[in-house]
Every structure is written in structure tokens, then in C-alpha cells.
Length: 234
Length: 234
DNA sequence: GAGTGGTCTAGACCACGCA
DNA sequence: GCGTGGTCTAGACCACTCT
Image (tube, rainbow over all chains, first blue to last red; front, side, top):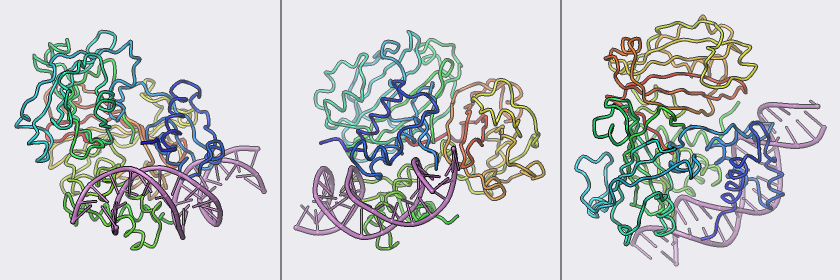
């Protein structure tokens, strides 16, 4: 279970950039230099740099170098980092409005389920994320009831789901898929997000695949895009 | 200007999958087999497969193989392929509602511009995409007025902007960034998309970087998400 | 021309799945 | 135990930018 070299390198520079050790426009050390510094080869260095580029932290320019980009200001919800990562912990709060319950999958579920998932039933709960005391989004999460012994007893209030899954169940998000629509809030949603009925919101239906084959994290998210917006790279 | 091997491989399998030569769940030939078939090495094969995986066409599973995924049904607008690629040409029509004009950049432009772009001014035009005669989205595009001699004379009606830029100006999209919000339609937008005022729409502000450094394609898109939705992978 | 990233070769060892 | 994808080495040549 040791960490690959490329991941160490990737995390190191991700941290350096996000901590502000580089300014936008700065050049990272060249790939050959990094090979020397970290005693590795270009294939490995390039794998790390490619991930940084996909995430938008740097931009590679042929013949010139790896250029640090300006930091993003949107909600990085179009990525694997989870919703939390773009805000300082003290600015953000996650409130549980429905504690986890075990039940059958909804009949009109928005992604096709494997037979294994279908049989296992699901654990579902509902959370609201607030920024500086203002509701930002409502997230209903569905997990297949597999590998999750003891999950029901965990208090999720203001905790990171991804952290819990990783540390207590060794489940790690790997990739995902999402569908996005614009819809207006009905009365129930409006009450929860403290907005007017018929206010426009983004609706996301997500499936996140994990290292455990057959264990996917599903969620339905209603997101306000007044003070923030969704941001993604491609 | 010859095509890299990995790209040939990538395009070949992309085509095979999208044409239906594989069903969801099928395994692609193993990486070692592809090395033999295409007389290349694993690094090259893996680069092609990694791109297919990022696009969601396959899913790699350690110890098993590369599994073909179900085809997507959303608008692939969260990717580089352009809006057009998910629909058959006969189903889709692109209507010009404002032909290209040269002018200064709007003062409240949504992405910071380089000095070079700022000085050059912009070419802007407005298009509506229809699926089966029904308006789907309104796209206002801004191009920096650089390298684009003769562009004003091109008839864009029902043509692919990306194709024109590639073949006539050797400009190729490389990567991009987008911001997404939910907003309600004002009267002008409602008229253009043939919907009611205050109907919810997705609003995208995009910047697409190209192989020409300093030449970015900007667009503002208002998209209906009734019959279709946006879809993306991460 | 020197230095950068882009592509590629020809190997190697490991971790995982499946029979 | 065998075949799969995941990581890595140690080179090579090319295309591009900058001076």
C-alpha cells in the first residue's frame, strides 16, 4: 500500500501551488530538472504534471515549460476533490438534515444499478452545505449497503464523507459521471435552501466510482449559483 | 504534421465503440495484445487507453481489462468535442442569428484577457443550435481578431466552427475551462429559444485554449435542459 | 543552439482478477 | 498460476520557444 512516486510529486506541487508558493505565470522546474531532484525518470514526472494540468493548476507549453495558472474561485464540484476542498473549513459547515437510514433503492433511480447493488439496498442521508452560514447546496447521498458495517453509528455532522469512507472502510473515489440540469425550486427545496419558490438552481445527478468494484457513491445535488458557480476543466 | 501513434489508436477505438462494434461490458483487447497488433509499446497504448477512459468510453479494471461503457445520452458540452458530436448531423441544425462582426471586447467580459487579445479586438457572432427543429441552446462566441484573415467572409450557417478553425487557420482546441450557473430566461432569451420568460436555463461561460498561444475561443451559452442534460466525467 | 515539453522504445517488476 | 492493468527505468529523437 505504498504511494506511487508520481502521486507524491503531484501532491507536492499541488500543495505548493495552492499554498501560494508560486504565482500565476511562474514556471515550474523543468521535467528534466524534476527527474534529477526526485531521482526518477521523465515518464513518472510527466504523469504527475499531466494530472496537475488536467486539474487546471498548471498549463504546459511546448518549448517553454509548465506555467502555473491562476487559482479557481468556483465550486470545484465538477471534480473528484469533493465539494469541501475549495473553502476554508471555518467558512463551511455541513449540516445533517436526515440521518442515514437503510432502505430499498428508489424505484425511479437515475442511474442503472448492478444486481449486487440492487440486492444490497441502500443507505441514504441528506445534508446541507453552508458557506458563512448561508445554504449553498442540498445533497442527498445514496450508498449501496455493502462493506459498510458500523456506518449507521457514525455521526456525519460537519465531517467529510470521503474521509470517512477512506479511513474507516478503505473506499477511495476513482472517477465519476454527472448529469446537470437547470430547474426551479419547489416549495420544499426553497425552504431548505432559504430561497424563494421558483428560484433557479442547478441540479446534479452524480455517480462516483470507487476502488471497490461495484461500490458506487450516488448523489443528487441542488446547488445555488448566486454567490458561487460551478467550475470545471476539460 | 503527422499523427502520433497513440492518437491513431485512440481514434480507432473511439470510432469502433461509438459505431457499436462493441457492446457495453465487452472487453477491449489487452494492452499487450494491442502492442503486438499495432507494433508499438505499452506506454503508447496506455496513453490512448487513458484518453478513452477520461472520456468515459471505457473503464479500466486492474487485473481484468478495459471494459466498454454504456454510451452517453447527454449533451457532451462539458468536453472538447464541441456540441455537435453527440447528435447525428441530420438531427441538428446550427442557425446564425447574428453574423460575425468586428468590435471591441465587451467591458464586463467574463474572463481576463491578455494584452494581445485586448488590443486585437474581437470577432463575435451568435448562433442557435436546434435538435429536430427545436431550439436547444444559444451560443455567443468571441474570437480574438488574430490570425483570422478572411474569416468574416465565411458563411458559418450549419458549419462546425472547430472544423473551420482547424482546416482554414490551423487552430486546434487543446483544453478549456467553464463556469456554470442556473438562471431564468429574460424576455429576449425566451423569444430566441421559444420558451416562456423566467424558464430556467443553464448558463455557461467558457474559455477554450488552442494550440496557438494567446488565441482563446470564448463563448457564452444558454442551454435548455428539458429534453437533454449536460453530462461530464471527472 | 540550448533548453523545453511531446512522443516513443524495450524492457522490468508489482498488484489484482480469475479459474 | 496466468494474464491483466499499474508503476517505473533509461534511454532516444522530435517540435517548439527563446536568445
